Length: 155
Image 1: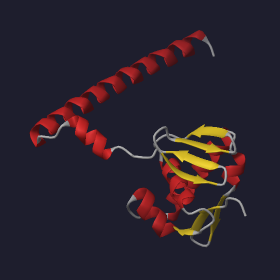
Image 2 (image 1 turned 45 degrees about the vertical axis):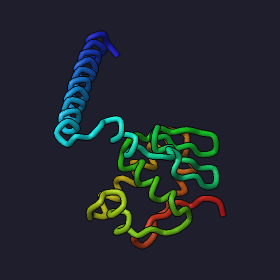
Image 3 (image 1 turned 90 degrees about the horizontal axis):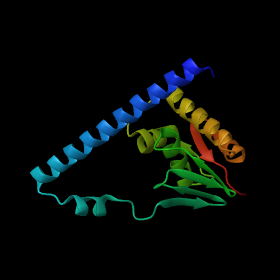
Image 4 (image 1 turned 180 degrees about the horizontal axis):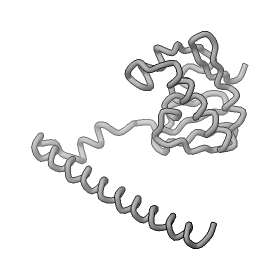
């Protein structure tokens, strides 16, 4: 990478970081205002709405941490972030080896109906992220068949 491109990248990252800081500040201010207007104690709100058990799916070498948004499989870790691929894997892992219909996945992951192409795209993205994270075996375990997907784990 030449110096000009490196500097351009640095500037864009600085702008992105500043924008993120501003957005988070605005969200915090908005939340505080909503709490004041609704007479809600922010501490109580977060205590009531946080997830109790961050590891919500564990099966045959797989664990999914919903707090850190990390997938662990056979002692390898992959950060997926708060993304559709993460939520799709989480849903599939809740019933390993069981086929789940596209409609159920739309309801549980998207909370509305989408095209089968949208689902295929997210499955493809999930497999790609898992492979890049060294979890190729887990990526291969995502199986689609006749309008359904499943996560094949163990026998």
